[in-house]
Length: 377
Image (cartoon, rainbow, N blue to C red; front, side, top):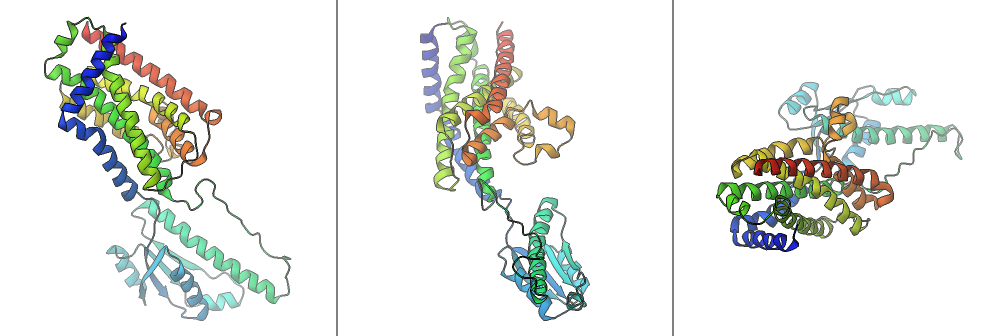
C-alpha cells in the first residue's frame, strides 16, 4: 500500500466535491437545516395546554385551586363551561387537551376532612402528551393538598414540623429545567453525522459505477484497499467538519451546555464514523445507481433512529428488540454525545460505549471491504 496513490485519490475526491454544485450544497446545508428544524420543531416540553374548567362547586376553595392552574405557565384556561357535555364537545373538536372538573361538594368534603375528588379529563390521542399533562396537573394538585394539610395541622397546634407530612425535595441533575432541547439537539448531531457519512460514502462509490469510471480506476495501479481508503477518508474528514459546524450552532444558537472534553467527543465521533463508513461501503456493493443507494440508505437510516433510544426509551421496547439495538452503533453514539454535552463525563465512564462502537465499526468495515473486494474480483 502506497500513500502517494491514496493521496492522489484523496485530491481527486475533494476536487470532485468542490466542482459539483449539488454535492457542495449537500455537504453543509442539509446538516444545518436539519439541526435548525429538529431543534425547534421537535420539542417534548409541553406548554400552553388548552384547558377547560367545569366548576360545579363555585366556592372560594374551588376558585383557589383554579387560580393555581391559571397562574401556572403550562396551562391556558381558555374555556369555563357549565355542563359535562360541553367538555366532551371541546375535546372532540380538538379545542382543548385537558379539562378540570370540580364536583359540587368539593368544599363541603374539604371542610369535613374527607377526600375531595378532582376529575382530570385528558385527551389521550397523543399518549406521550397525555402522560406529561397528567404529571403537570398532578403536581399542582399535590401542592394544593399539601398546603391544605399544613393549614389544618397549624389550626390543630401541630407546628414546628410535628405531624407534618413528608416533604419531597426533588433535584434534577445536568438539566435542571428539564429542557428537552438540551437532550435532543446532541442526538440530532449524531443523526446528521450518520446521514452525511453513509450517504456520501455510498453515493461516491456508486457514482463511479454509474458514470463508467470504475473500470478506469481498476486498471490503474490502485489496490482495492487503497481505493477504499481514498474514497472513505475524504468523507470522514467532511463529516468531522459537519460535526464541528453543527456543534457550534448547538452551543451558540440553541445554548446547549457543553461540559465534556472535545478530544473525547472527537474520539467517539471517529469510532462512530468507522461504522457509518462501513455501512456506506456495504450499501455501495448492493446498488448500481445513486437512486438505489439513496433508497437503501433511507431504509437503513430510519430503523437506526427508531432503535437508538433517542425517541423511544430502549428499556420500554420488547426484549427481543432490545437485543437487536445492541447491533446499532447509533445507540452507543447517542449515549456518548449526550453524556459529553450534559454530564461532562470522560473515558472512565464512556469506555463501554466506545469499545462497542470500535468492535461494531471494525466488523462492519471488514465485512464491507471483503464484499467490495469480491465485487471487484
